[in-house]
Structure formats: structure tokens, C-alpha cells
Picture (cartoon, rainbow, N blue to C red):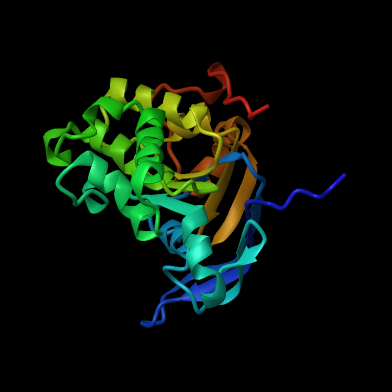
Length: 255
């Protein structure tokens, strides 16, 4: 059998900011192609710092990050950034063009796609998030949940291998939250989801990593981690009042 290259391999990653604040102290984990993994942890644990290393926004620390076997370094940066799509918490950080179509076309057009091929890429990305009929609308006329779906489409239009989502369920009403969950389950990409929304992690991600004080403190099935009261308490993670992770069917791994 041919060995399958992991979508993401992080090894010995340590990083300190210029002011001396050490955010990561040697992070090790890998994510297989097609896996959906939640990255959990209290504020200040280093989650954002870690995410910004995945497509080279932050560099210069110790250790290595590889995306589909490619080291994240200057030589591979363009390809790495195509393969790792980050959807930020606020969709307005990603939507800045007059129409939805232009926003979704922006990345592929900048990469040289044009004509019918570009239109097809835009249509496919919008179709995948259920926003095809809003193609000609100005993004600021859409609801928050619709803008988040368009932000996901802008990243999908680049055909990434890894989709990194920062707090994807924040500020969404229950219906929008469920619609986004259905979309994320349907995508054939590797997903790394940074979230404080522990029920959402349980619903969508069979596996979770707990990042705490700059190291991976736990790595395992999401339901097991969330059911470990001592572990949760030690890393300042709290489930909503009355929520019992054992009473909820865990997310199914992709076949």
C-alpha cells in the first residue's frame, strides 16, 4: 500500500513573540487527509498563534509545519496558502468586494483563472454552501449567517486541502448554526475547527485536540475528552449548563 501523506503535520512547534511572550512550547500533532478535528482550549492557550503558522502568516519559530508533505517555508508559500484556507471569525474580514460573485472570484482570479473556468469555480463554491442564488447581491445586504457561508465559499473557491475555521458557530442563530454544520459535514476536505462551542465540536469533529499553555494537553475522541471532568476543569473548558456529552451521538468519521 502507498503511504498516505498527512494533510497536516506539526512537529516541535515553538514560538515567542518579539515582546518575549512565549505562545507555543513544542506542539506535535498530525491530521490525516479528510479528518475533521476540533482545536479546543482556553483563551490565551496559543490557538490563534498555532493557526497562523499553518499557512505561514507567522514564521520564524522552532519546529516544523508540513501541509500535504510540503514544509511551510518561503519556497512553498504560494502552494501552502492555496492548500490551507482559513475562514476567520468575522466574515467582514474576508468580504470586501461589491458583489458576492466578485468576492468568491477574487482568489482564483488572482491565481490566474479567468473566463468560463473562473465562473465555473465561483458557481461550484457558492453551490457547495447553498448561496448560488445570492451571487449578484452585495455581501453587506446578507444576514450574518449568509455572510459566513460566503466567506467559506471564498476559501473553497481556491480548492484547498485543509479548511481551518475560527469559531465558525459564533454569533449564529440556531438555524444558521445547523445549516453551517450540514455544509461542513458535506465537504470533502480536511477540517481543523478552532472553537469554544464544545457541543458543536462534538457534533462535527470525531477527534479533538486540547491546546493549553502552549502545548497539546490531550488528543482523542471528542466525546471522551468532553466527558473527562477532571481534564475539562484543568484546562478551563466548560460545557453549557445541563449538557451531557454522553447523551449525544458523537460525530461520525468520514467513511
